[in-house]
Image (cartoon, rainbow, N blue to C red):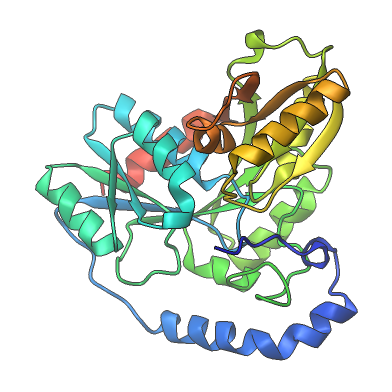
Length: 315
C-alpha cells in the first residue's frame, strides 16, 4: 500500500502557486460537502453519541482526545465505549484504543452504535467521523493543532482541509492542541464562524518522562500525521535530539528499516525513541533498544469541559 506524505505547501500561511493550480480538483470535495449538508439521520434515543473529528486531515490529536474523554466520562460512573471504523491502515490507533478504552470496531459507524446499545452503554465516543452522516451525533468536537491550524485554508488536494473553516457553524465545540503565540488569532477566527462554539485548550505531557535522561543523545523517528508535535514536545522537555527521521502517516515498518535505524543511532552514539503509535507497529519486529514516549492529553480548565459534558449528556 502506498503511504501518503503530507505536502509542505499545505501548511503555508497562504495558498502557493501549486495550491492555486490544484484548485479545480477541490470541486468534488466541495460538492460532496454540499451534499452532506443536506443529509441527516435521526438521533438514537437509546444512547448518547459523541464524535471527535477534524476538518484538517490528520495530526490533530483525535485519538488521545477520545481516550481523555473516555476517562472523564468513565469517572462519572457512566457506561462508556469508544468506536472506530475498521481501516487496515490504522491498526496503530486501534491497538492503542483497545489497550486504553472499551473499543467497539466495525465496518461502519451505525453498526458500532448498535453494538454499543446491545452492550447497554450510556455513551459511545467515535474516533473520527464528522463527515459521516450515517450517524446523527449528540455532540460534535473538532480537533485542531495550534501550529498547523487550518494550513493554507484550502480544501483537498489544494490544501489540508476536509471542510472549510466556515463548517464550524455546524459543530458544538473545538479542542485547540498545543501552545502558540497565535492563540488569540485562532480563537477570533473560530468565533467569527460560530460565536456559540465552545473552545477547550489542550496540551500533551510525557507520562513516562522518568524513564528517560533528556541529556542523552537521541535519534527520534515517527510516522504520524504531525511529526513536529512529537519533536516539539521532546524539545520542550529538553531532550537532546541529534537526528530526526520522518516516515509517512500510519507507516508499516519493515525489519530491515528498524535495523537500519539502529545502525544509524549506533553511528552517532544515540538512543532511539519514537511515539507510542509507531511502537505498537514495530513491537513484533526486533524493537529491542527502542523506547517510546507515552503522552497524556491535558485540558486547561478541565472542570469547564466536565460541566459542558454533563449538560449535554444529561439533556
